[in-house]
Length: 480
Image 1 (cartoon, rainbow, N blue to C red):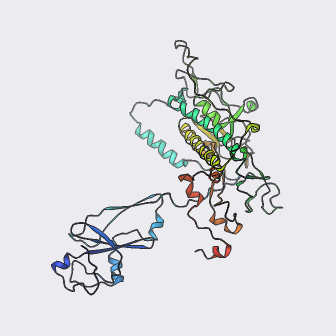
Image 2: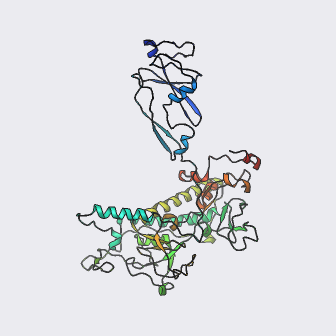
Image 3: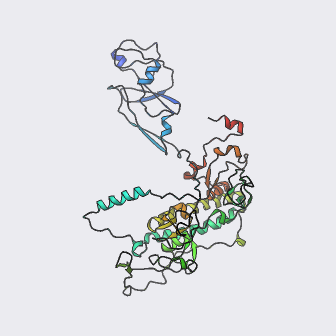
């Protein structure tokens, strides 16, 4: 049974009943104060009362002022409103510590605070054309990891090389490659249908796009004649190619063969880089043949090898069932959704295809190497980049047009194309003065959200859904 304790009812001298009184502990989190009382049986109860002083279970029964009580009784260290800003993510785990030693205090336990999604993340950085792309892993870390591997492998047997480096396929990734290719086709077909009902605008002079009834008013155009227009965009109707950027790469008949020279740059076909990655991972397309090995290669030097004799192996079964491959729908046969319910279902399907394509491509890139130029968007699917001297980025004359190859990341292969997130089409549209309050999302995600799909969890941090947007400039000036 619980009784309210006031300042007048507390004894002034220590006694056995006083030692068994409720022990008061106080903490705060983001300005919210809570009081917890603990008994000898380790049961806890929370109350809200204004107790101005407290009787300590040890000492001479002196009363502490609120100021001294705050200095000495703070068991929840690190849970103040300022300390909470130092933590990110969706989980916060703290160890409860008590400054007052007593036999009646329960043992320290962990307090876990969870939130549905992480705090607001910064918007994607804009890299200038004069700036080189950063390495996915810094060079210092790569060298340190290489020295550690050499140190750990001293006196141990040599590890077997992964299948792609000896000319073989990773069998468990063949269905993933087909799934990525079909997800890409589904994404293109669904985007063509959604563009019939969701308005999307593209700038006539730069590569910026906007999803909404009208284009945004921000002066961010960097195209031709931008200074004459004072940075304003000239909006036109967007197409599927503006949203899903097609990064092309050379098709390799043999991914372990010699490098493509500068003279062969026009004789070798170029296809979307995602399609080339799927072909090298096991997808068979008749129009793009590639060499398949059933035995590992035989190394005769550091850069020289010969193919193993496969005459002893039986011929592959031509009647083996193959995974079907979807085809793109022509623009003349596109049928838009008829009502809002069909639009929402189509948006959900499009969003799932987008996630499947990116997740599958990320798995393939872990086994099949992909290279990107550090100065331009050129991508090469293979262990070593090509020798074509077609880089036209900043100071390409000093490199004689050669690319600066480095390891590629997922955004190099499938650019997300971030656009401004419109909080609601019924509300007032984006205002130029309130730019700092708006978030961004990939163009495909923004189209699906405006079509009726649920916002995915991983994109909520950049969309700034929990940021209150002022109604006017005067209200924005009052924000601290």
